[in-house]
Structure formats: structure tokens, C-alpha cells
Image (cartoon, rainbow, N blue to C red; front, side):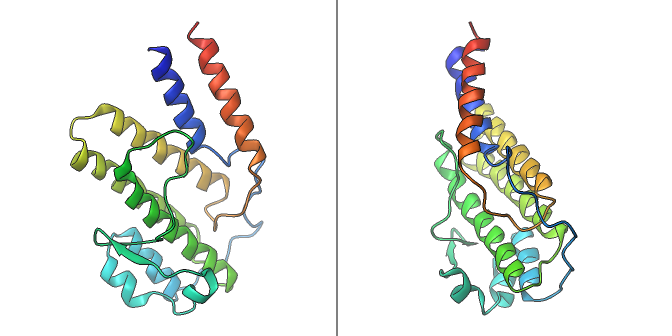
Length: 194
């Protein structure tokens, strides 16, 4: 593999694994499942059903989270969200990333009101992101192996991070370990191709 491609691939993997070193774990006990509006909205997002998500969207979300979700390309999203990566990702990944961000914010909101829907909610959001990224590759870049590989790496990284956080609502983490991971992996990649 060429040095540039290796560096980009390792950089992409590192960027997507940000948050995996020295991070806080999720709560010690499993949250109590709750079948309220938040769980229903998360389930609808996981199924890609924007109409159902809008119908059951929790009324307290906007004042608590300080933004109103919008519809983009027929999908309910966080208008300020996006893909978090220090390496460029395909522009057409932005809508799936914004939808995933909204889903994670719904999990944070649910935790803040004491009704976290349980681990299946985060698993469903992550599975939806993976499906949506791969669908974006098939639609916007048919036959592009690099796009599919990037979607695969992103999906694995997101799933690993969720597993690491016990599939609970995402928690704030220090950015310092992230820089160390990126630097270490990039240095290892450069050394490995010599």
C-alpha cells in the first residue's frame, strides 16, 4: 500500500476512534428502560422514519438541548452536527452524521430527565448510521471501494466506542487522549511503510 494511502487510512481510523483512550465509562448499573417519547423517537430515527420521529419527538428536547432539529434530505437531523474527523470524509456523509448526532443528543436528553431508553437504543442508532453511510456510498459514489472502506471504518469505530461506553448515553470526554492516539497511529503508519 502506498505511504499516502496508509497515512490517510490510519488517520481516518484514528479520527474515528477518538474517544477510545482514557475515556469515562458509562454508568455502573444499566439505566432503567423507559418507553416514553424519547425512546419512541430514537426507535423511529433508527428505522429511518422521519415522520414517526417528528410525531413522537419529546416536547422538552428543544429547551433542554438548545436547538430545534430540522429536516434535511427528508431526514431529521441536528442542524449543527456533522462528522467528527481530522481527515476529510466524503461530503455526502454529513447528513447521516447529523442524524446520528441528533440520536445521540436524544440519548443525552433522556439521561438528563432520568429515562434513558437502554442499550438497544444506542445500538439501533449506530446500526442506522452504518446503513446510511453505506447507502450514501452506493448512491453518491457507486463502485468506489475507498468510500465503502471509509464507511466500514467509521461504522466499526462508532460501534467500538459505543461498546466501550456500555451502549449508554454518550458522555463528555477530554480531548487530550485523542491527540495522542492520532499522533501515535500516524507515526506508526509512517514508520511501517519505510
